[in-house]
Image (cartoon, rainbow, N blue to C red; front, side):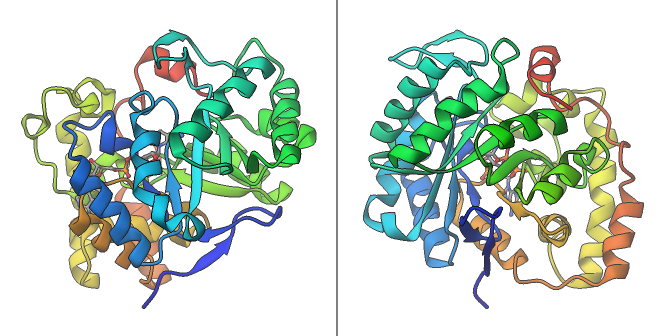
Length: 331
Ligand SMILES: NC(=O)c1ccc[n+]([C@@H]2O[C@H](COP(=O)([O-])OP(=O)(O)OC[C@H]3O[C@@H](n4cnc5c(N)ncnc54)[C@H](OP(=O)(O)O)[C@@H]3O)[C@@H](O)[C@H]2O)c1
């Protein structure tokens, strides 16, 4: 069965219900395997995935370069989504500051992303983190101009509060809100973000739907992660919390066995059952095949309820990021 597509927001954007997150291909999650990553992107396209997610700060820059290269011969079949302003980057990709939503920065950031993605139009362009020093209406005023000029197709915002989403949407219509959402991270259900996106007709894109790998049950110990893997320093993976969170993730396994699927597939199916778009990340062909198959599963209401009972909201130990990362998100 082929993966279905759906409208993301009400501005005209359509994507596959499951996209492919490409962050781990060049950043955060251990060693690079560019040939394997390109093969994974091509396999995703073959399987009907149309949404590909990256950001200027992945690498920095190398994530966009790799994705641009991989989709060059399939450009018409993909929705390229990238992000700016999570950190301030100079021309060489050096981090020179925190979140940046200044209109002049938006204008220079988009030119760099267009170049690296090897395209004349970014299909979906997100503000990666809200800049506390720049009114979001100013940032989205500049972004609206990019849409008018045709450099950008649709707009999104990541890790923004309900109030910020409203203000941004009033300045230039949003198609997508991207925030972490999984059985491990359910904050958007109670802080007004999901509700506001639904009310305003904005699509919701769930990032890290596999709990950064935890929910697949395959990662059994921190020692399995490469030395340079970001998760070694992430609160949920540290020594105090790892065993507790792994035990929670393992509760999905029994339910998955009963349904004849893998734990990761069931975790993804739960996210998709919430009526959102999910962008699981992987650099491996076998994993993308497994994850795409999850998008064609029908999971009954009893199993969905059992999953929520197995991992009650808020029971995961540890914050999503350490202090600086938490300060940059609006919850
Ligand atoms: N907006 C934001 O601030 C933000 C933040 C983080 C991420 N994102 C986006 O969201 C995407 C997804 O999030 P994520 O990659 O952080 O987390 P995720 O999708 O929850 O998990 C990714 C991890 O799970 C592993 N994995 C994937 N499929 C698997 C399978 N079937 N079996 C076993 N392991 C599997 C991957 O392994 P391998 O690495 O070995 O393939 C990777 O280590 C990112 O790629 C990025 O595009 C956005």
